[in-house]
Length: 215
Image (cartoon, rainbow, N blue to C red; front, side):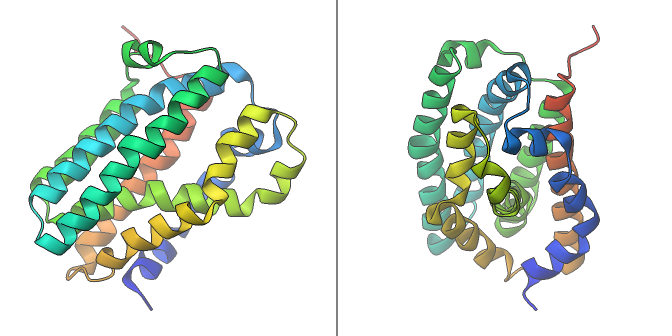
């Protein structure tokens, strides 16, 4: 069994909660209030920028082969992903300036701090392990809900979700899983992967509850 298969198996209890989260289910069937999706999209900008920073830090600590792979991934996020993101903003009546000025919610800040800490203080492969649940869970969510998506009458939601059913998204996950499969300490990888998976659940919950700072 691959290391990533074991990581996924050992976090099944968390991923089940992710797959069953009302934000996810309502997004895929088209009943999610647009207020929640607008909130999610604005918060996601901060996440995407943080993700690219993490990749650059990881690349700077990697050998030539892993550096090339990580920078290619970062370039994809900086071009294709951000281009799709700006289209989604426009479809929701928002601008990139709206995203830049949106204050990151408490959960978003905590998740970013965790990912950046892993990128700076852990090995390059451990840093990639922290990023894996995000990419992988989105593809799995899309696969599990593709039948639900067929009856979704919200064009914006369908367009957003369809990205993760694309072969390119699946290949990206495989490209990220490959180096993680070579990790030496499973216990360390499990701790990182578990924490990142928990934050993935919390991010959906944050968006569903429109989380704000209390003060």
